[in-house]
Amino acid sequence: MDDRGFLFTSDLLLSLIIVTVAMGIAIGQFDALNYQMQDFTGRQSLDRTVNDAADYIIKTSGNPSNWNEIKPVISSSLPGLAYMSNIGPNNNYLNPKKMSILNSNPNLLYNLVHTQNYKLLITRADTGQKILEITSPNPTTSLANAKEVAVANRTVVIVTNQTAFSMNDLMHINPGHPSNDNGFIWFNKSGDSDYVGPGNVTTAQNVNSSFYISLETLEDYDFYIYIDENYATQGSPINVIKYGFTDGDAVVNGTYGPLDDKNRDTAISKELDAIYHPGGWQSLPDTDSGSLLLVNEDIKSALQYYNDPEGDLKFWVSVKSNPQATLSLSLVQVNKGQAPFQKIPAKLVLTVWE
Picture 1 (cartoon, one colour):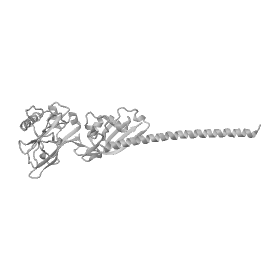
Picture 2 (cartoon, helix red, strand yellow):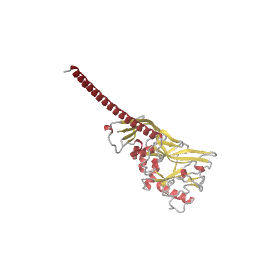
Picture 3 (tube, one colour):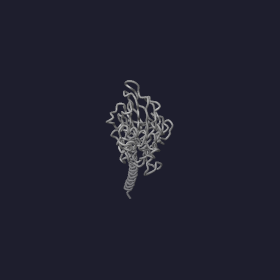
Picture 4 (cartoon, rainbow, N blue to C red):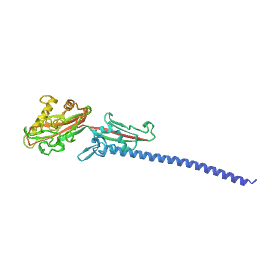
């Protein structure tokens, strides 16, 4: 036997075994690396999704920007929560109205995160008190069983009050051409016969003629009449403001005959007498600019009188004053138990998982 041939064969077999083992190890390492790369890419994608969605929520008012005011809510709406001012969305300042509508329509978050596995939590930064918690109604897996989880944390501010509507520069309104801003009022300017009122807005079906506050809403929010402006270029500013709330169909439905000034005045007074009893017009005790009056009970009285829990209402104002005065009023909506114009620091946490 040739010992050299045996040795050669043994060396070759040993080499093949070593190469095979090395290749197996390399393939295993490659598979592990490939899995790690896929895992890393997946995490990157999930992280990008949750951070982009969180930024959209706090930096935009959504698309459309009034998505929370459309009934029913459009299912494809993008739910931005940023408060919208005259110059655009205020980043990180969240609108409670939009938060409330999102809470009632949690599926809208899917349009931002593109997964059924999500959770949104907003808490007070100072006390940890829960303000809003939304969890996907149809998760494909529970958070406890998730393979991958991505979280975005943001610092935000909750603006406790929102303006339900405003009536601006009342002393300078042209009675024949009321704008949408003053379409809710009956305004008695410097006497008993010169009125500014709904004008051509005469039916509750016109969205500019009524506003809506339900009995259920009164359980969650406080409403204040706020005097934005009250001054006079000559003489004294307004010192007496009378107000009242009626049903949106009352007064404007022709019950009291042709809606001329006299009949409308009679109609408003009779409606308010019935709601608030004789002398039904209510009075603002303070007419300084910046003064506030809580009117939840006044609104509730009107809703209960008309047996209208959904709240189709009109707000009437009557003023006798110096015609050189300027008056602006707002109805301000505030979270229950919060002071008007308070800003609450909060934390927003958005979680998505697979």
